[in-house]
Amino acid sequence: MAHAVRFYRTGGPEVLRWEPAEVGEPGAGEVRVRHGAVGLNFADTYFRTGLYPAPLPAGMGVEAAGVVERVGSGVTGFAPGDRVTYTGSPLGAYSTERVLSAEHLIRLPDSIAFDIAAAMTMRGLTTAYLLRRIHPLHPGDTVLLHAAAGGVGLIFLQWAKLLGLTVIGTVSTPEKAAVARAHGCDHVLIHTRENVPERVREITGGAGVRVAYDSVGKTTFDMSLDSLARRGLLVCFGTASGPVPPIDAMRLAMRGSVFVTRPALADYIVDPAERAELAGELFGHVGAGRIHIEINQRYELPDAVQAHRELEAGTSVGSSVFQL
Image 1: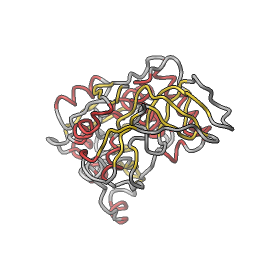
Image 2: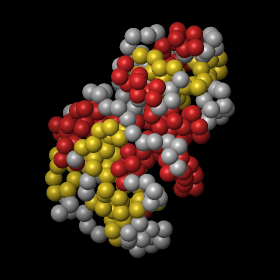
Image 3: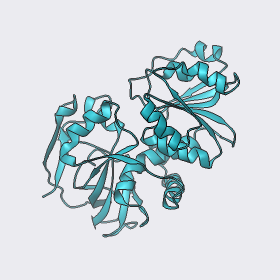
């Protein structure tokens, strides 16, 4: 019988429940997918705590990879037996099987295993839009990346090298600094010990960085803003430490007419053609070995409570998956 992780109230990891689930048959435009691996993302905790509202009770998770078992009427792009991955779907990925709209699916090349796909679809597509859509970047540009040893961070570092960028990365521990360096980070700063804006100015000869990529939020917002070059861009794409503070428009002017944006992956993959283009570039790099996906934490779905606790404790390095 199929099983799934669900939650009936918001709160800490303890609200997650592993229980039997009725999957049902796919309706018009839908498919039934048997999962091979499920992604564990920090965004999952936002739904669990209520930061991202969801009607309750609800499933958990938005990313997984597996095999199409059945298709509903009107589905023409997929057939039983197809290997697929997805991210940004309605909640419910923490499950052995599920039914979802075929519009969320991305065909998965045979060269990419299910666990790799579940570890990288959200993180990889996030990296793709950060580097290929948000701001024009050129070889030799210097950028700042927080959480450089995280799931997005390790993909970002490798992709940035392919683009000829110089990356200043921040981490929280010496151990994570070693991981970031091993994946191509040019300058690694331990933000708990160093003054990041001062070090960024030293590294860039006083200029600052063209773009600062910040998935941490509350605790790194000021250091990100203060590290920007004149007319630089701060990309706030996550809030691992809490929401960013209210933005004072005059402060942006005083910092050199800088810009701030808060993008969401959903707006960069809603168009099927653009999603296919970004996924194709990502899968091409991974399939050819130019980008290696680091899976350092593996869990079973019944252990979702433990997985969330460790994720929020900040001990994770690279990507995490639930292996089925």
